[in-house]
Image (cartoon, rainbow, N blue to C red; front, side, top):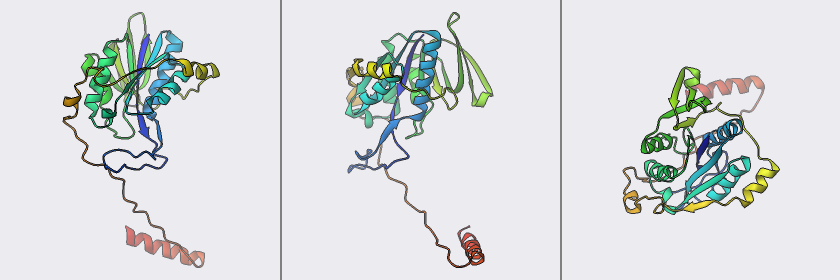
Length: 255
């Protein structure tokens, strides 16, 4: 089985997130991580490869620092990686990114494409289904299990917490939900291999995307803003009974 996994960098919600001077993009002080749902997809791909044989190729679109993310994926067991590196990626909409990724994937052999069911930053969930639409292949979203019959080229997946069972022919695209795969860790040999594995790098133009048209995307980012901090604290003093009464009065005022 030849498996392709689409990966995305997202701001680490557990850390500090800031916005740059333009008000249109994330600032440089922000810590970034692999999108958690994409990590599930990656782990599932490695498990499938170990079970069925074949290869795992990673694909990532971003403006910077994507190579580090891809090498971490190779350390886990992926065989190859393609980096769509272009500053314009951060300013175009998800459909344009999906179009670029599908253009790259179309030239590669694949049986299965795995994506996270959504990005933890935008929560849009459109990239996977859009890639499948551009490639004209089946898509099954938010799967929790995936069984492959390589002889029949048939996939069986469950979604909606097991309430939905879907069978489809390969090639197909699946978006991963929590529970699809357990976390796996890199081996020493995997880490060493990741350091020397070449990563194919190209820009939007090389991927066949009209940059001028992409800059006029149907969805445009107007501004970014951080949530206002509204949390306030109240210090309770005195005996325990007085503190309880004060807490009750406060809750009555606030509800």
